[in-house]
Length: 283
Image (cartoon, rainbow, N blue to C red):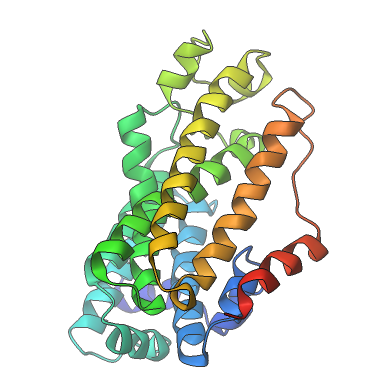
């Protein structure tokens, strides 16, 4: 595939805000000042596009080529070369001093999915995956929010892991349907489940033990994130507070619902989402 073809296949022409509209984080992004909001839409848009490549049904070699094209796009942006379609992202990078290593880490993370289906990773492998696909996004975001580097990086570390572990628990059946299983083998061992075949595991009556293991890890990260945000200026943690409360509420609903089939999908009502947003929209 030529470089020109790679670039055109990797870029989505839809406005960044339209790609963010269906996100669980949309309300949190909407309360930000305009420049911050636009930067967050660009970060989210980037994440959506590379994630969509990893989740596509294209041959793996094509997905890897398209992700490599995105690496080159990011390199070009940081080398101050114009990349059609990434002008707004480039402005956000300059305005908030967003770090190239974090964009590349996100690509490395989704490439873990594109290269092969993850099934029963070790906890260390899962932790690396979370750091790349979630915490790296957090490290970009906290710069937009205006947090200092120390508090910002620690918040990204804990809130990113909390959100991603919650996502994994929420999407167990959906992931299994496409051949993926993110529950770590340490959790499966606790549940006395020997298989890492996704459909076998999600059908096992003992899966609740493995899910509770991951849920407790998520709770610990939510608690650490809240401790960090309590020390920060409230105006700078409005958005991550909303993100954290939305996902913590989903996690607690899943725990209350239980892990046995049928696992009814967990969704917060619109009124609940608005209530959470309004609690932090004005400080």
